[in-house]
Length: 272
Image (tube, helix red, strand yellow):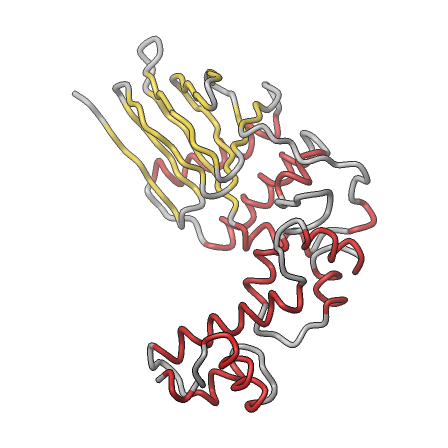
């Protein structure tokens, strides 16, 4: 009789147990560490096939599409445990790192799949310590989940110095994604120097890197981004014009009204 069991705790730990073969298309939204307890897993990405056996562990970079073939092997069911690292968690982890200890020449690996060395006791210890929670169906606490995630990150960082750059999503060593940061913080009163610092860059490097991403200079990009959000909020009637002006980062209502009209051909008040 076929048995299928998938347990997902906070979209961080996921355990799969199958007694028949299964195939699925998998899109990694987050960086993922997968460990095979039994059975066999074939991962096909960009035409290349990698097979994981019992005790194997692999790191899958986020934002990559893969085809997974999960197989029962020599009478043993397919069983795997997955550990996911959210962007929020990795940012918090990075903020607490000793920056003076960071490797100087870490390079972001473009490969979407990295097979970790076999037989490492730290890998086996981490995943075997997780299994009892799935076997008993007792959900681990959020504090315990976080401890296991931290343990998983250190496994990766101890595997290769280049994984520092891959894990923390730096386009270059120790630089976080510019557009993601600015899209999350455009409404705050931050100078370009502060934005450069928060994204791990000098001001000159910040401007140079931003030029690769947009035809607009950073200040004009910020104004355009604020106006686009303001236009959406005003036209949908969710907030008053005065509230919108300050919420999106403008300090002066008359200045906001002027540049809004220049962009949309109508004043904010008349857009309601």
